[in-house]
Image (cartoon, rainbow, N blue to C red; front, side, top):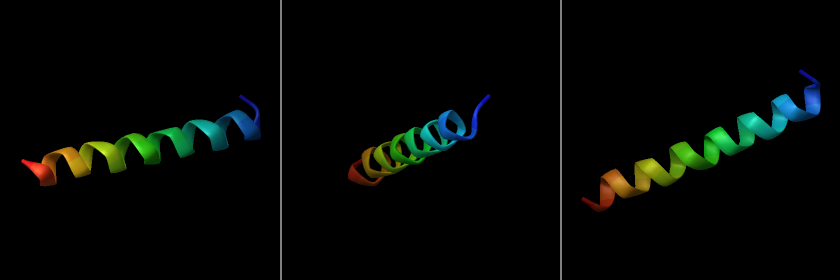
Length: 27
């Protein structure tokens, strides 16, 4: 796994967590 792909996966993970947190708070 290259460092760039690791950075991209970490960024996508952070975006997904932020999205799910917003969905939970909206409930």
